[in-house]
Image (cartoon, rainbow, N blue to C red):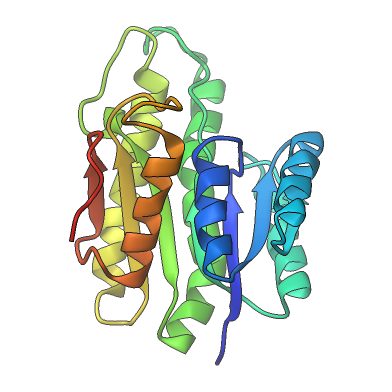
Length: 227
């Protein structure tokens, strides 16, 4: 079973998501850009099309499983099959506040956005990758998964910790299948023109995808990987 040379960027924003999309566009991949806000996606697609890339916007809410499924169906129809690269880049830091004061329903929603949606995508796309014996499932992690923090960051720490566990256990489950699982844990705040520039960070996804890095996880501390 063959896969489409398409990269899904779930959580396609102007930072790491857009930078990762540029990396895969440079490798000849079509881009399925997924986010919650249609107007921001339209601007992003226009930028890629102006640069000669084949890109299309798909609207989905990471907190809504039916919305994710609709995007999956639309991506398959557009790409002519399942994608060969899926990058989960969605996150929310809300609700902020002390862990014991956060509304439980809002906390559960944040876990869905940060981790549940990642598992949802894996559940939908992994079977085709396994049948083909190739492709990549990639994840953007956060340093709060390594060192969880309170004082307003408890929600994000919990969500990213759960997502990191999902990626690492998925790598164990798929070991030897030919499917690459890669986790890029960004251990610091991103900012253009710094050592945590999204364009520098995003290049590491290609290293995870093509096997230049054989470990499941890259912990990015501001220094790019060197072979």
